[in-house]
Length: 418
Ligand code: AMP
Image 1: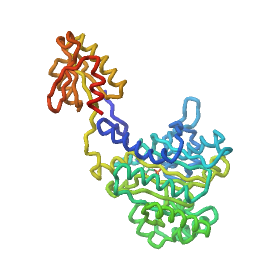
Image 2 (image 1 turned 180 degrees about the horizontal axis):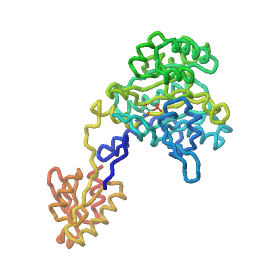
Image 3 (image 1 turned 180 degrees about the vertical axis):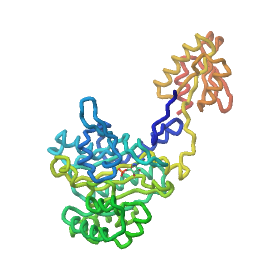
């Protein structure tokens, strides 16, 4: 019997897997340089954290969570997103009692039972950042700028930023009921009618054309913002403009999680087809209280690693084939194998990437392995070389070969590769 990766999942295999690593590094770079601290939380949490934190009426909670009882009878859920866990950890560790805001970033795997298709997986990877415990439009703008800087560092030119404000506890209720009045008059299926009563903003996010067609005249949240929300949003916009970050106002932008307030944004890439969001986030001033914490206004984002790789591939970035190692050892005989093994270890300790032929292959097989490795240099060691205490250093592209005393190999290669 053989096995395959479960439906909706896939393996990152070399050399393409290098792309995932490169994307994670590049997306994390700007937040790390901005002084955000690294946080790692468990891949699973008590189910209640997500049902309360993400929201009972969201697709994530109603349809997409991987939930199970552990052997102790606890209801556990594989994390479908990062923010609720980070907030839980911040509250649990008492950080709200210290200096605020707390700025954190993370990187990891997330799990949602979604309808699998290109760019939408049941196991995917995100880099996220959260600023917890402060309300300042400069923080919202800072996060957006840092995300855009991450995409730019990867060479991406096709990322668009959509921006909206969802209002606050003061102005959202009036908008919500205006929207409900409008939606109740539409021709919608039973499930969507129920959603109108629980979470009407989510209806705006319905992707079905027959629903979208009816939404043309829906009231817009931006027409219902209170003075404070309006001023806040204007300041975010001004700061973005001042930092040279272009954005498109999208008064219909809502997000799939219940906890968002005020600033909401999404990063889209047009080369991806239906699953065009490469990242998204916003302000979530109510989340802490929803999960039993003190009032902690916060803002954050999560950027999708898998889709960012797809976006880069769509833009034709990543053309260079990554070289695996710089030096490859070719031992001819048992004694030579021991010496090469030691040399390769020394090279690696000196910061030079190196590999060698394993498995007792003949000269031909070993030289083939050297070529395939992409290495610049081969170190070839036979009995005669052993007797003279030297190794043949061969530049693989030119076939030029010189004998180098064993004791000088590391320094010689350091010089040639610097
Ligand atoms: P969300 O928390 O849904 O806003 O997700 C943030 C980002 O994570 C999205 O913009 C996507 O790039 C990525 N993402 C979310 N869900 C998936 C998924 N099922 N498969 C791949 N990427 C995803």
